[in-house]
Every structure is written in C-alpha cells, then in structure tokens.
Amino acid sequence: MGLPPMTKRVSDMSPEELDRHRARDRERYAKDAKHRERQQIRMREYRRERYATDPEFRERLLERKREYQRGRYANDPEFRERKRAREREKYQRKKTTRADTD
Image: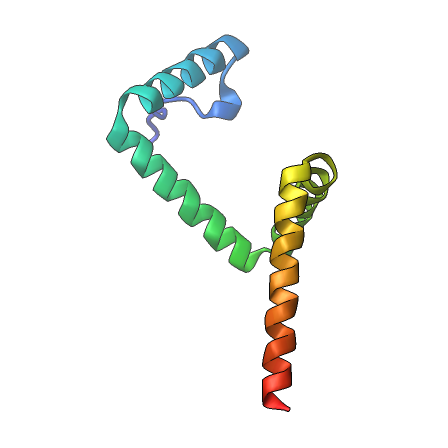
C-alpha cells in the first residue's frame, strides 16, 4: 500500500523534467487526433462546469471578453461598421415590432 506513485506530480518535477513532460504532451497532442479530441472535450466540459458554478471565474471571463470587444471595436473599422449595421437593423426591427403592437 505504501508504494511510491508511478509518475511524479507536476508540482514535484524539476524544471528539466517539466520541460520534457510538456514537450511530450505537445507532441502527442499534435500527432494523435483522438487524444486531441478527448482533451478538447474534457477542457470544454471543465470550463462549462466552472462557468456555471464559479461566479468569480465567470466574471473574469466576461470582463476579458468585454475588454477584447472594446479593443476590437476601437481598432478594427470593418468590425465597427458591421456591428453598427447590426445594431441599426436590430433597432429598426424593434421599432417596427413596437409600432405593430400599438
């Protein structure tokens, strides 16, 4: 029962071992499509679960997204024009829908 673990924890690895470990993981991720798909599914599920249950995580994620959108709006004229056009269309739809119901 008191056997040592078969592999070290990442936190117990030396910097050289950690580099080798990460290189091996990157290589497997690049070469093995099934492994890559499993990793992506696992990470997607983890993030979805954490987003649902951790308000701090959700807020950090939303703030990062808002910051990205603000930067993109400020620096990308094509994006800004497309967004303005969508907003105008949305406004027109709301306006016509509101006029129809009155």
